[in-house]
Length: 485
Image 1 (cartoon, helix red, strand yellow):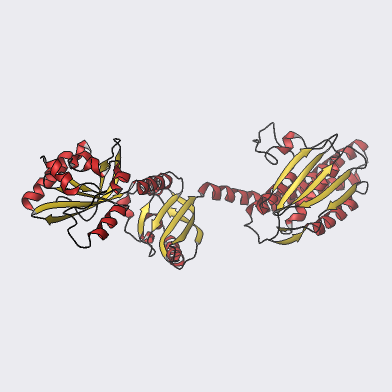
Image 2 (cartoon, rainbow, N blue to C red):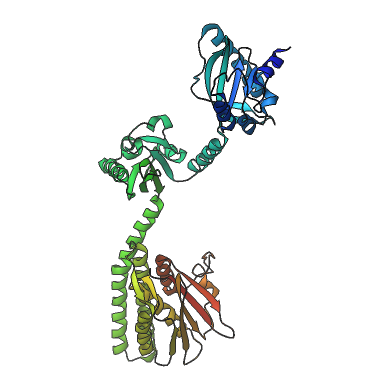
């Protein structure tokens, strides 16, 4: 009888677990326990022959217990590691010295179909009838490894600075983007309090912000602020946040820190503020001077040709003053932080806007129908949006007596205001970038700022503008806004 035959006789398969390995009166209990566990059990002898395998091994490695019992453990070990495994067991049998930690080590095991399976193995030595045996508990790590790879793929392939912290602010992990920006290695920052890392050493304000962020996140709050941090060759302004991650009991286990580089955005904002000041003061004042002199000339000149010139200057100045006011409003909307929203009745705003436009354009006919009692989440700027769009419909009409139809309808989530006219429609150049994603170019752009102003306000509300041509003549602009909660 060969050693393999003896092993099979000794251990049989999991269909017959009457084996010297279960010599106890409670044998049936242990047989059921071993047979039904989801973790693999494998026992080898001193010659590395497999003498026992439970059913879970087949789920993990593809071999049935009967296929493994009597074969060498090398069946399950990748060829590149076989010499090290054999040498390690031989050394242990000879000296008692372990070459690995038996309490839990991650190893690759060879599946029946040839691919490697990551497993966590815990080993124990025991003796039966004077024979030394070694039993390993196998746990399949494939799912965990796959999740880890997916996490690392996302974690390290984002343009944002991302890190994981202990609840006390100690750094656990940092992604490659953040490490590269600071010019440091992972070992330089892991284990440090986040406020002591290179990014926050620019000044005391940066360190204090990081400290405050950890404290508030540790109390269960989301912290978010803008601050300047230090890099290897430049500084950056970041949108910085730390948020707590809790377990099923609500206890904080981790803090996630993120930083989005907004330096170019803040630089453009600074330039826009300079332009805003220019529009609000210098340009407006100079245009008022030009307008004043033109009006004076118009009143005092006798030559009809010169009077025409003065009138043209006065009209152009007035047009530029109006354009400057629209640009100023546009800059106000762009630069101001999000305003608080409140319930606004669409019908009330429309009535105010339409009454004013009827006074300014008495030849026009403007009608309002539909769900005028609908309420949206907005603010005072809603009047600006509706005034710009209705006024645009009136002044671009082909008729001497322009007609504008305004309809309001609502759904469970949104309110739509439809402004229909009988004019020639909005040119494609004026629609570019407002009603579609077409790029604005030197030959494809609008001449006014009213539509842009309306579009920016609606975007800020979380809504959008839409445009369609009407059958026959005219067009319809739709303002779709979120309903008030």
